[in-house]
Length: 190
Image (cartoon, rainbow, N blue to C red; front, side, top):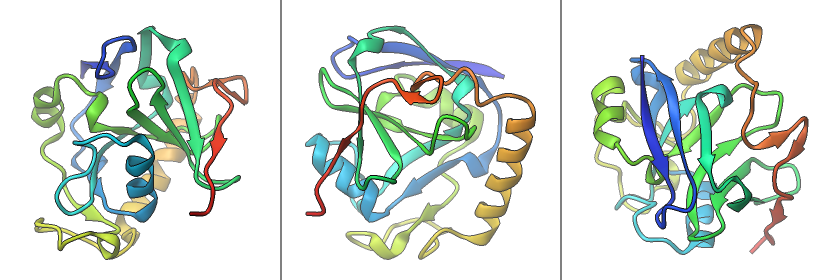
C-alpha cells in the first residue's frame, strides 16, 4: 500500500490519497458525455484526452484526505439527482465524482494527482475505456466498451459492499454528515 500527493493547479488545495493497492480494474478512462460536460464547465485543458475521455482512479472516500484549502472545494451536479462532481473553486481543477455520502465509492480525476507515475506504478495504466459510444474520436485502447461493462459493474458492486461493511465510506471529505461540504450548483440542461 502507498500514498500519493494531490493538489489543484494553483496549489491552494492540497492533500493525499492513502492506501493505494494494486487493482487494475480501478484505473479507467471514461468517455461519457457527463464527464465531457463537466470538463466543458471547468474550461480547463488537459482534463479530456484526444478521444474525449477522462482518466479516473476509483477508490473509497476514506482514502482521500485534504490538508489545505478545504473551503475551496465546490460542487456541481448536471441534474438535481446526478453525480456530485467536485472541483477546486480557486482554479477549476477537477477533484472527483461521488454518488452520495453513504456510498463508499468515488472516482478521482487524474488532474488532481501530482504523482501520476506512482499511481501507474501501483495500479498500472488505465485498464479500459468505458462509455466509448460518447468518444469524440475512436479511443485507442485494447479494451473498450460502448457503455459500462457488466464485468466492471459486478466487480464495483462487490467492492462497494465490502467497503461499506468495512466502514470505508467514512470519513468522507466531501460531506459533513449527509450534507455536501459545498452546496451543489445544478447545471442547466444545455
